[in-house]
Image (tube, rainbow, N blue to C red):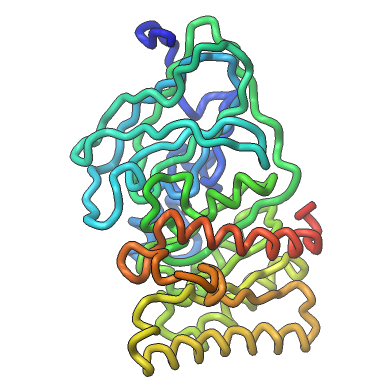
Length: 349
């Protein structure tokens, strides 16, 4: 292996590094999922969670056999049911979309707000396409990447289609994946040649109209995924309005409404089970109604099927939030659905 003692350090915001997942990065110069100043009021909890870097990626090509990172976080890891590797670590993948292979995870101790770690240390010097995933449940104040002094550094291939924008809950944000690459939006990002925008806000994806208007300001959408049922206080009021606001801006961009994945209590409490399927059926009927009214670009995905038919109860950390197995099953079941929908998107091909 190579000695990482003598490295050249680069800011991750320098060219030719390409950072995605932060639509307002050029404007605000910080790793944040929503704008620092918005024309629409951001709910206080969402405003805080927007600093969590879920879905963020750095992409680049290099022949450096060594890659290290130095990071300053906004805080330590503090969740009892999610590893620090998922909360505040970084994942490194190598290869193009469709053949992107996991290599390593970098993380400090749970109490660390600063750490330095090795993501890549391989014997062969050759050009590689690198994707580094940001932490799911922590903010990043500063990030430096260390490469070999004689390394070449090139931009990554451009994405072939528009952005896939996912709005939802803690499950969308990535709770409780063991490492960043295993959040279902990040798994999907390795299968589709699109930038993914993760707008999952833990406990706070409530479907406010102001959030719909902020989301509609993100340019270049190829598809919207609405996966916020579990946080919605009144889905019957919020969902039709949320869709209407998106449609004001983009009449022909596909919208996929995803009902909540199953959770353990529906197996044991009839009233909870009935409410679960009542909410699912409402979303299915709403989408069908909008289709009948002429919207040919809206679709429904039954969330009760996303964890699979067999042993789905074993796919969570706490009866609600998926493990890596649960996220992988979600991505596997969403992949053919999303592939078909993107064929219908004006900017999805």
